[in-house]
Length: 428
Ligand code: NAP
Ligand code: HSE
Image (cartoon, rainbow, N blue to C red):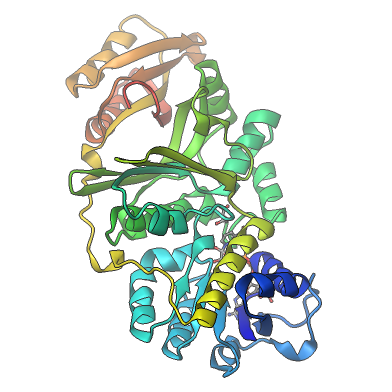
């Protein structure tokens, strides 16, 4: 019997425990060896649990799981950097295999932990850390190992996609939609990790590292959250033929990697615009394979638990056959990160302005001064309510930022109400 110890039994952990208990015979047959649960660590023994497991297996001390001599596979689904990192490190040093769903940890300390696993000759698998139930780590590591990937782009946060869908289709408020995502177990313990784009940035760092064979960490990703998006932005996007998504994009430009998470308007005709609700999608582009799209549920116990159990079965097979999973040496090579100001972008801009002669000319001259060309402009409202909605042609991020700074300094501009990237058009 291969014995599995769980660190955490919340949304993801309880789905994993339930599958291991209910489908033990089937998984054993598939793995070629019986897989059993050894210990489970949680914070509180008093909480009621959806899984029925013998009382003596539960503990509030996660070190008991890691130190248990009968446990060969440690599954970390508790979240956070510490004590998760110390526990995983200790498990690997004891020759145990590890499965984790922790993207925050893998994005920043994954390189160090993978080196520990290599040293110990054990497996450290993390399929569930990116895009919930979608198999994406393994295809990038294995199936696409022969290709040269130059772009990875997608919607990799279920909570924010769920919120945007509810706001867009049902007119829900941001707060109502977030509360529902939290109730369904999609959001992180601190939902600002989802809303402010930290979760998506961590996932993009993991994807970029594997896709481009270099060690990219969360701090390398230019990040902007979606908390400022209003119902008005969504309405305006629809009027212009766009859908707003929190988009994660990483590109290889020469030897440099440009990676960004930000809200963006996409044409409604683009396949990513149709990715609704808690679904995630990852577009991968390679020189040989062309375009690939991976689609599925990006959060929730069922999908994420499925990815975790898949890793457990892989490890059980490896133990049974005396082999190891494909690691990949990406974490040994430092990444060269492109200056974000040099990235090229188009923007949607909403300005509250005075409604009087010469205003448009003054605004246009600021754009012209920074070499940013205007693709379209539309005035909405009159007098005190006058608003200009502009879309720019492609220009550098730095030129756009300088333009925004000068625009808000103009007497005729009352406020910069909104600005957002426009992507997926003919101009990029
Ligand atoms: P969760 O529902 O909050 O569960 C966390 C579990 O860990 C709980 O059982 C908690 O115990 C236990 N725990 C936390 N700190 C502990 C400590 N110091 N000692 C012992 N036990 C401790 O979290 P989750 O949503 O399952 O997420 C777990 C991990 O999976 C995170 O890294 C998350 O980013 C990742 N993930 C989540 C999803 C998702 O859809 N939820 C998807 C992909 C990846 P109690 O039950 O007693 O509180
Ligand atoms: N909070 C994350 C999300 C969980 O909403 O995508 C999946 O990683």
